[in-house]
Image (tube, rainbow, N blue to C red; front, side):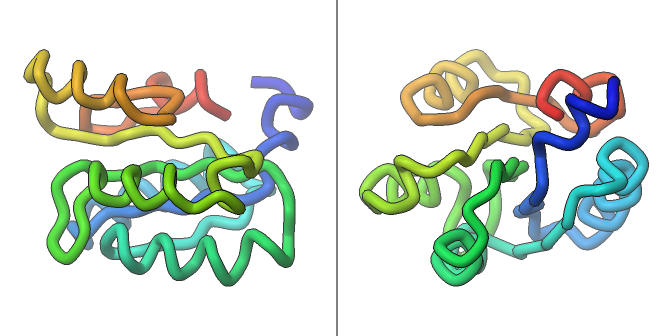
Length: 132
């Protein structure tokens, strides 16, 4: 990964309810994209709140790593609201779904949303590198 690739992502929003997964992912993200500001949300609702607060102020390229299965608002519910929010759906935001499921129906459902990728957990530098 070159400095140019790394510098295009200025903010990363990690959306995952599992504290262990979030901790490990944050460590991995700091290693892979040291210059990016990494924020954490525990569910889709928190993620939308962060986006609505932060994105209008700092319009930079953002990557969202979005867990599919979470309480309060899951990844697919987040994507539904994201699509309906005009100011967010036109923003420079890339979304990558994270899931422990390799089921073909989950992957097919993911293709119906504005996500740029689907990573099967566990998250690794190799899997992440194509999106940074």
